[in-house]
Length: 345
Ligand code: SAH
Image (cartoon, rainbow, N blue to C red; front, top):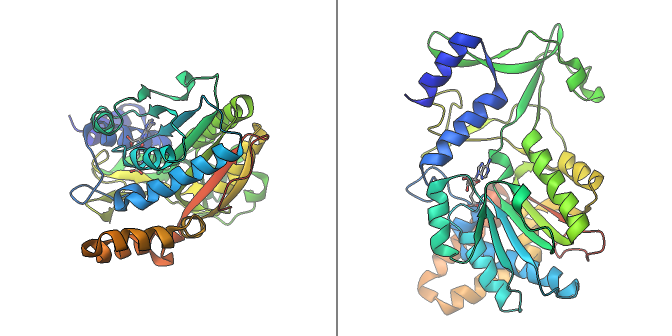
């Protein structure tokens, strides 16, 4: 039975489900069965656009590790590593500076674990953050991981705030406001928002960022969270679905498209600080990559491979131009309090 049919039955039997439940089921089904990345898939991520992305991340890691005194034992950690391209490119670049960490992946998709195994033969895989080693500093990189975690949504009605739920009407999934008062769940500043306003929170993202912040405080290390999102908290539903490189309706065919929501970096930075990490900053991907020297790296690659110069130029633009990935994508840095500041923030 398709996920859509299963959810329709569930709703018929027990009533509407939360947007969070719908998104969690949809993405679990979506990622379990396929490799969604690349030209033949549903979407392309920065590490799949060009090796330059992972290489510059590797240099960032090597730089902060060097200034932290080059601890011998250190772990590279990547949640949601996709095809393993970012890790492979970053670790190759970092090794040139003597940084050769243990490699730990957190991944739920068997299809993607198989792909990662071919690129990262010596890595260890984990189902969640709880089994990561706890006796050495962590260098964590997450690209387009937080945006795939399910969000809760609340909608302001004439009778106050309600959780946004998904029900069935005429054979289609539709979002509706729930019956239960939810005013206590929304922040004080939102209480007076106009009727129809939607706000989101991402409890899964908050949980993993808090866990990483606690580990950075206890173990040392640094983390880069890269995702498309807002630097400042902004109201509105940001739930979207992408299939075959096009936007589709998130309420049609759950499990057949990638569902994402924008990441609220301001909320996560506060959360990380409350759990003991140092917030290094949140900047646009374009500014971050420029600060790390992407212009020089692109020029060097194009000089070495003149036949590839046009493709390298296109990838450089795609990663950094404001109308492409340069502005919508943000990079948030965290570190242990006794680790140095990071480059590019
Ligand atoms: N970082 C990669 C892939 C991004 S797609 C890249 O940039 O190319 C999202 C990744 O997160 C996939 O690897 C997906 O399987 C994984 N993922 C999504 N939800 C997850 C969860 N709850 N636990 C672990 N991995 C998850």
